[in-house]
Length: 144
Ligand code: HEM
Image: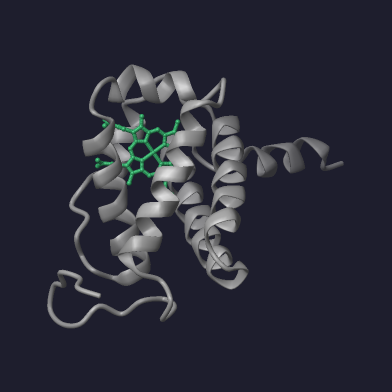
């Protein structure tokens, strides 16, 4: 496995994760996203005919997260903040689809690592975009 690194060797979160697995997962996940009624149109409106470059960016992103390759140089918070149609409930659909895709492509222990990272990043994106989660608002409302 050859991985570009910044400042030394890559440190995979699991020895069996490699670029080929990341590519399979990214392609599978976004093929499903594009067929999902509430998420597909949000992507199509922005990505348009640039799907291959978008998939390459997402491979760099997951390579940075799972292999610590340092390849991703984007600005996810700014990009998602610019998506005016994005609502908190879209994240639930995204995560459910990501979890089933990861379990279809990867062994269960590796799928769990991908999902854990995706959930953490989704939480931080939501916090930046919408403030504290709705759950805490609902809890406050229910409080006596
Ligand atoms: C609510 C569900 C989501 C939707 C509808 C969505 C949609 C999009 C779209 C349309 C883009 C392209 C933006 C552009 O090129 O200007 C994008 C980029 C990206 N998304 Fe998401 N996203 C979602 C959730 C997530 C989550 C949970 C993650 C991470 C785990 C993520 C990671 C990224 C990354 C890394 C980029 C590239 C950012 C960059 O180029 O700087 N997204 N997303």
